[in-house]
Picture 1 (cartoon, helix red, strand yellow):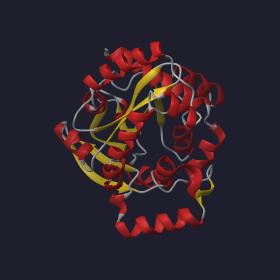
Picture 2 (cartoon, one colour; picture 1 turned 135 degrees about the horizontal axis):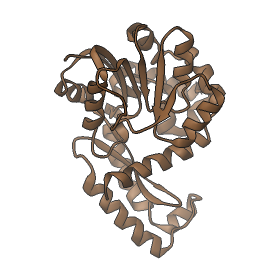
Picture 3 (cartoon, one colour; picture 1 turned 45 degrees about the horizontal axis):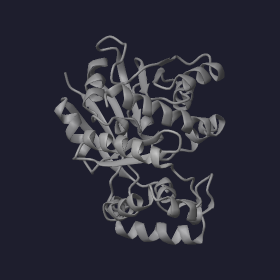
Length: 299
């Protein structure tokens, strides 16, 4: 299974994700964001051009440009690019792969990568190398990757055990309300799953899912604390900040909607508030959602 196959899987997953995404709500959420926005305002340069790589519908580009920054975007999903251009014709966004950017060396003063590097089964090295190439000397890059926090180190091995029992067992699938899988598809799916596993990087925790109409897909890697920092230092980046960030999204990923009074707005109910307070006592690294790294390229 070559890189092109995995790239097709990435595009397919995000096509499904973006079909459900409310663009207007994404735009409104920028001004309310207390997780990433403060780092953008603190570190992104007002001079020069900033690239958001993997920009989706371009909501951060639209928001930050209105604040006086000069952003453009690259997005691998064609439908996103087309919709963004239709909604925001003034935004400069192009279809492309962040591992093979079509820009000259030393072109950008800043670079944003929010939840992108984890989706490359071969690892982040090629994408990071491209960041270094297109940034000017002392250019600023801001990254986030999903964290393999203390809780997940305990929870995910248990979850994996039960998922592997459940995944191709049609009786169990019927009980929990899932569609059944034919014997022919099971054989094909297991072959694809085996091939995915042979391409996985052992230093990360991989998330492999099953999409009903296409079978197993590699979704993402969870990163350990400071793991991304090491990859960046290998490319001669200086780490300015590296922080663990807690966010209600991690509670939705683990517990679903049962801890929310309003899941859409991520407002906790009483149970959710109690769990959130308990995790506060245990520290941010116990239940962190993402690691955010701000880095400066040294050339």
